Amino acid sequence: MAHNPNSKFSEETLTAAGFSTISYDVLNVGKQMRSGEMHLRPEDIEAYAWAVEDEDPWFYGPGPFDGPIVHPTLLANQALLLRHDHFVVPAGLHARMIFNFHKAIPLGTRARTTGTVNEKYWRRDKPYMATDFETCGDDGTLFTSGRFVQMLFAKDTAPASGSSAGSNRAGDAAPAYDDNITSAQGRSGRLERGQVLPSLSRTLKQRQIDIYSGIRPFSIHTDEDWARQKGFATTIAQGMMSTAYISTIMATAVGAGFIEGGNMDAKFLKPVLCGDTLEVTSSVSGFTRDPDGQPRAHVTVAAHNQRGEQTMAGVASGVCLA
Image (cartoon, rainbow, N blue to C red):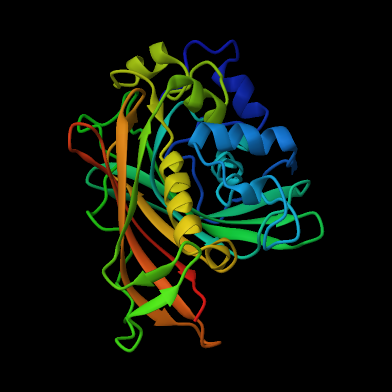
């Protein structure tokens, strides 16, 4: 993948400063990465909530966590941008995001993410990297962990298919559901096996993408000319915006047991263009029982654009009341 020809820096200068242009050959398995610290301020919560259209009252006042908390996926970009703290990244496509939510993140938290490149591989003639990450507070509290998989551009433009690749279903294997549990209490009422949850509709506006991704030149998310140079019809939303929609569904349906103790596995099947309208649908696929005896609801999620194309497939789970 070529160095950005529009940059005022030469490739030699950047490499000498420790910022090689990311590529399959440059990337080393085992490389450890560390983000800067982020202080979660009220304006950060408000901006993120507006960008993803989630105004849960737990973000703004008292709730089950003794004070305001941030959106569970708010710090996802800190994990993804680990690469940008160590490489020049002209473009890439997010292929998969796995989240484990350990603790609610309070307003005012100072958080940092660390990660390790644990795998690189080729799939269908496309290079990928996988990174395991942990996000912790300055007191060592583990808030979130997981893995993200990113497709690197082997050439200067996106693959001709325009797809980030992946199967039609996220998750490597379905859990063994407990047939003795047919329902459990959620935040918004009783959850039943096979229940279809309320869908979400989101039309992706450029201003929302700008706030979510941060405006900068030479970004496929916020620079239309650059996005076109990379093979897209216009700017594209980050795949992780769809994980925020999954979180909205799960926090609404399950509640606190998703924010603390929940998880999510999403695969991004096709880029979401600015202006696309996503319909995010979900259903309760079954229940398992945690070691402490609490029932856990498992939900299957999908997103389709206005053309009927599936853009995301996901699974998520959260702990319910008995």
